[in-house]
Length: 456
Image (cartoon, rainbow, N blue to C red; front, top):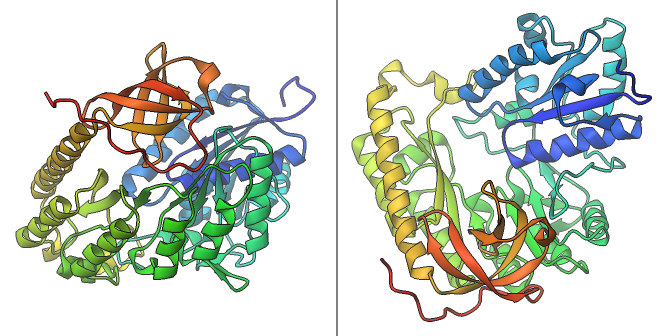
């Protein structure tokens, strides 16, 4: 124990927004029991590493970090692993890392205080049982970000894509009670937060208490004080006409969708068990753009999936060019134990040099298209929300409604405030801008383009 009157906890989070949201839940649960969050592991009585298991590289990074943290631990400190990697490995992780005292999966955070108390008495423990009724009702998250709030509305996944470990680490799909989501949205709005991000493994499949995702978007968007509503990550199959109409008709819903494609080849999509075709994905993107003018699309793409041919990859490049993504998260296929993709014949494995070459070509294609579109935006005006200080001094980072990053001259006094800016320059991925009007109007769509500056 430290000399403080109250025990301290440090949480280090890896992976997706869901993990970041879960970290806030853990800190909220421990705060109920008197714990104080600290920003450095050497100051903590309890160190929790909140993990991702989606790719092998993420797990290897965490294993290395556990070794590093051993050097930072006080003699009586407790080290725990939480999240998807903890769920996947369970007791095997305790055997692998002798200085780890507890392993807790995504449905076990309510029991953290008791597990820590047991660890203090020398009992190493795991909590990796799925609980289909656990939505953490009654736990108030300790939010790290006062500008926007993550609200988890759906957990788990029933799609079972052949490459994906999520159904193993997060369990089956279940949606949070509708009234609980709206109550949390109202609570964050009353605290002054104006942007909400709804989270779920397949967030637009939300269904609870007779309500669907369209109802949820409209209700959250109508909460007084909420100016922006985002969501991630949706599945292309779950964009019903009701959902698209709710997006188009709810002013607070932002003009950005992160729409995972994974491959532009129908043959590869079938082997991935994505349950849509290339044409089906293109049609979904088209329906969204026709309903929501100015919509920005980002995506996830995997290269080197077992059996991916040169023709399959060429179809992916073609789809990227046809759709015109604003950005893409691109990955090499990472086999995960227990997923069907690991049972494909060894002859389907793509040689590493081929995978690396495809990834480089894909990144170049995405960046080229993104830069061309961004150059055309120079001179246009947008509402931005200032999110944080930029890495370079004298600047802040702001975000447009369609999720573009804009660097502005400014300081910490601007955080959480809205401005209308003109875009003055671009690196191809981010913009620079100047403020032309403070305090943009609530719920405004992207403003009409001003005459474009000459691209140079």
